[in-house]
Length: 264
Image 1: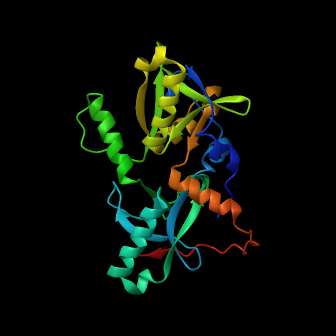
Image 2: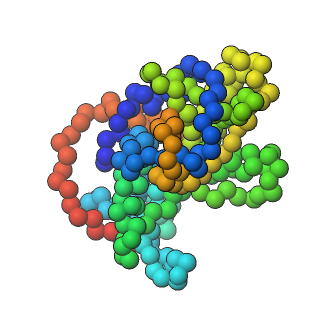
């Protein structure tokens, strides 16, 4: 598992002092180099199902060109990943007893995805969001007047406020950052603090939802330096995992082995 860098900064972000709103323009006009994209994603733990050797459990599906492709599921929630394993043990005991939930950083998933992007037999990844947050995203879109029944992808929640609808920011060290949350409930706490600090702007607050994959594409493909202000905030469940991981005794890493993908 890749290490999760800047752990303290990430865990402390939710309780940071809110500064206000900062107008940074359209996210589609922003950008970062590949290594900086990986660094931004590195602090987010995600979870996959692997065998005892650490090779991912994959399945073969048809793509848009009707060709077979190998796909590994990437769970945003550790609990959802464990639920999948528990169900697998019931439906396929022989396979279920040989697999486990393994953490990996979102940055590593992104790196592997980029490395496999143009390979005909490369491994693909499918993100599996927490359904409670998907429903929250649907509710937000409906509240804004959109007629939707589902949300495509993994939702991230962000808030804007003020006449120019600038993104709400928090202070992280000497920098103002724009937090994007995997849980709407976390963002709501930040919004409530902002409304108390700036009651004159309370009525202008607007919560928005964006797609994780779309945000990653914006980080990768755009050109303005303000993109460096974006920070992803893990869900509470993931923060608890990070805290446990940071306090656990470190073991010497085992020699790396070539992946031998298990299929189901």
